[in-house]
Length: 232
Picture 1 (cartoon, rainbow, N blue to C red):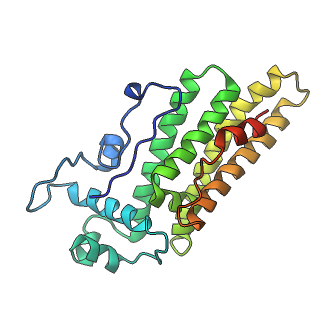
Picture 2 (spheres, rainbow, N blue to C red):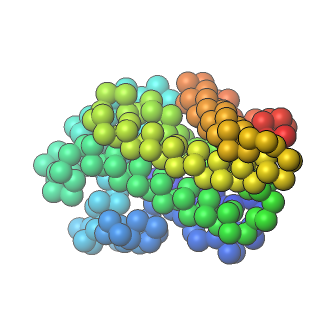
Picture 3 (cartoon, rainbow, N blue to C red):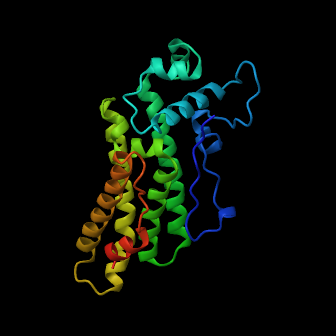
């Protein structure tokens, strides 16, 4: 069974970070219960939903994967298409389950960084770092984040991913405004908006390059040096 990797917040002890995997309570609000070494036989209530999302994420990890159909997803799971629709109203809803996981995972880490890191510049650097680390460790999710997996799907999915990056940019603006103020800038808000926009564009570009290279070009390649240049 495929699983999705957790990404610890750099600089925060691993033991203090909530485990973030697709088969944990991170998605408990959607009824996705813990599945540990599922026994043979009929899945327990909620397990099939998790298995469907894990299978979808696993199929997205194939670099040259075409648009994923419900028929192919059902075949991978060894069930009928009708069985998929007993758990999800549509394929778009399955993708929304993956996006929900991305949101909860990254937002949790961003909140931890904001609460525990006192230096505003380091906050911004770590936010971008965890975003790219998450994509690197979860190639299927990187395709969703980069928009590649959503190209021919419902438009609301791309809109939701855009909102995700808008929220990340908003958090970066807060950190970078403090940096600009401490540097004595006459226009800290303008400076923060510009710098946050550049950082998000950089992160999105790194994710897209990772996906288009068939997951060969690491999104965290020379990341520390790049972030020092972008946040000075």
